[in-house]
Length: 365
Ligand SMILES: *Cc1c(COP(=O)(O)O)cnc(C)c1O
Image 1 (cartoon, rainbow, N blue to C red):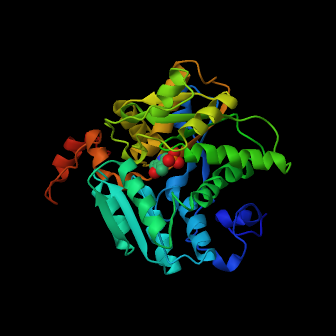
Image 2 (cartoon, helix red, strand yellow):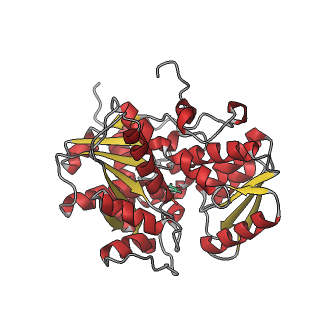
């Protein structure tokens, strides 16, 4: 493996592209899996790994999905690509479309952070903000795709999108020396990522690269948690959430397309589904930044908030080896930090004595 490229395409035999000439890559994947030192101690956990997937080219794990889907669009000779997005898929699809030289059409619900809109627009995408929910934006994108020869990443070429995300499972196992962790904790919007990680693990098992069982748990924000509600109420079906209220906008999908499958995966692997409050999420963002040096967005921090809650509720054993996926960067939602960080200090350049007083630092002179 050491001679292979350091992106998702190092696993090309397991990805659905026939001609490597069609690969569209900005280098997504092969992100660091780092060992937590301070946070794991605070949580009282033996071993915690953090998967730094916010370090991808457009700063979320969605680059994995977009790289495969846009490559497949080239292979299918489609005229253009697009997506419906809660924010992160917009930039990922737009960037890969730019790289491939394909026009790109993005549909987002109102409410998506303006930083995420600017990011997608910077790559030259046509961006449509729908005066409605994500589900309505998704519906419109699907209709649009039917009438033109366009590959909508998360609709008519969705199977390929999902294949990109499964590489997260391959990497985690490879980075652990081709063995499995005990438990992987994953943020859920549609539930697609969670199922993709499970698919990746099952494939590695089938080809004999790993054995061992991995618990898979999913986390949603309380203000939009249809999958968690079904889990808690022991229902086999999802009741769509209509009133969404959360700072984790990336996860704001009221009617999750892969929800029932995510539910089955969680139960089959003896994982758990858990919802976390905005307050829990802000605390997790702060802990990751101030204890580990990792700045992530709310949609990513839910995994750490969920882990803490699961430990408290006895759903995670302190001896388990846990991996939390960190799926998106804090730079995508910069105003979030105003909630917890200290204010900067403004001072004249001559005020050295005042400086030590304000900062509370003792002079060594
Ligand atoms: C899209 C997204 C997810 C997972 O979404 P699914 O629809 O469940 O695949 C997780 N975290 C972030 C930051 C995302 O943008």
